[in-house]
Image 1 (cartoon, rainbow, N blue to C red):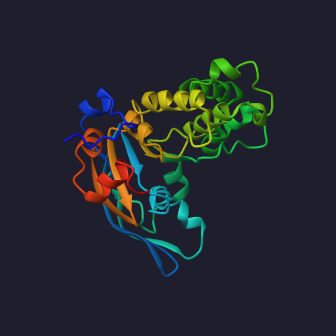
Image 2 (tube, helix red, strand yellow):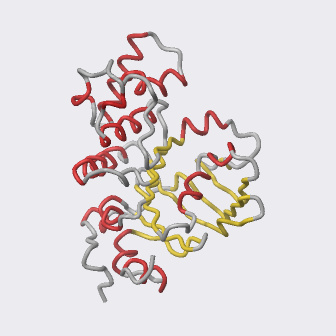
Amino acid sequence: MDMTPPHVAVGDRAAETRPGPGKISVRGLDFFYGDTQALTGVTLEIPANRVTGVIGPSGCGKSTFLRVLNRMYQDHPGQRATGQVLLDGQDILGPEVNLGLLRSRVGMVFQSAMVFPMSVYDNAAYGVRAQESLSRADVAERVEGVLTRAALWREVKDRLSEPASGLSGGQQQRLCIARALGTRPEVMLLDEPTGGLDPGSAAAIEDLIGELKKRLTIVLITHNLQQAARCADQVAFFYLGEMLEAGPASQIFLEPRQPRTRDFITGRFG
């Protein structure tokens, strides 16, 4: 029986796409805020060059999970993760991991567009300059490249010296994505990247996600089930700190196996 609620439509692209080789393998992941356990036994394969959508009710552990994937939690005392998170076969939870290198490989963009108090150009150049010592001409070339990849170059090429805060909300979010692209990441973590945007700006970000996955592996947290259906190749459903179900987007939205997944998708809770 078709379990998709009227407000969620699964696109043909999502239905036809099949996962490729794993880029990140999460195995038996537990996470703690002090003595409080926030994630329990999460196991998930994140395929390369695909969009993995993470859905679930508020407070279920989605953002916590995302922050484990580049060890963002490491900046906060008392937070710890156990289990394994393998990036190309290397466990990134190990003590020998270089956090700077890890975060250049695994970029992150948050819900609120966090532009720096500097020009559009300097925002776009920030990641480039942080990772490499390049000539001014080479930096300029890279800046144009990341702004082009973020579908922003044509809109800002005559405003590069202006404060980034003067851009629209959608432009600021794409600038944050461009800044993250400056480190040449292999994985991009997107935490509700369209949450505060108008429909037109949100659609531009969704189109951008489709382009970026040609080169990157993307993990997308969203409360918007329509967005998950449109953008994700596979979907993982989280509930109370556990990953209850994961599979191709078409299967999760049309034939969920777990009752709580079905209830969430059909709007019975969450």
